[in-house]
Image (tube, rainbow, N blue to C red; front, side):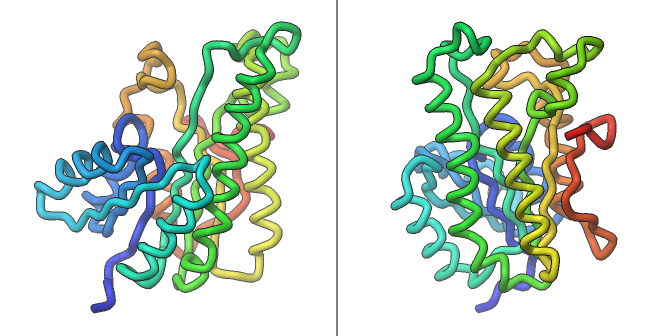
Length: 243
């Protein structure tokens, strides 16, 4: 039977901001697919959300494993037939990351593989399903740290946050957003980079000043954009973020 509700895939959705994005999309009446590297953790998250009666699915998807990405796309196609929303949330930091003069190149490589190449790989795999939607939406989770303008502005509060691997990975995600927007401009698919803000999660060592629920609001807003949707933006909690 064809699912008449909008269908959303959220990667890295078994905890943190990803879980809250999935929760809020579910509360908005969507069919949510929890994407998780660990299937058991994904099932536990899906069971938590599904306990309130909303339809929740789960797929194993490791953004560093092309085979798992292909299998996840095949499973979504078989179960749902299309995808209306893709939220590229999965991402990592690395303790060995740091300023360009001291950062571990191995750490930078791991971060880029996950945060950028993984996001690109998932997007490519899910695009055939998104093309079947009447109004596809792609939300790439970015960060103010991915802004070249902010990184080069001594007056910015983020100027001293020199994490060459993480910052560069989010700048690359922004490039993906800009180029996808141009490539898909004649389609119903809208793509935007969204910074959730500084959120208390495992990723930040719980040092942020926003809750995961608060951090999820902006990505959810852009996932649910209607006919007025504008593509190719880079936004955060305070509005437009400079590239």
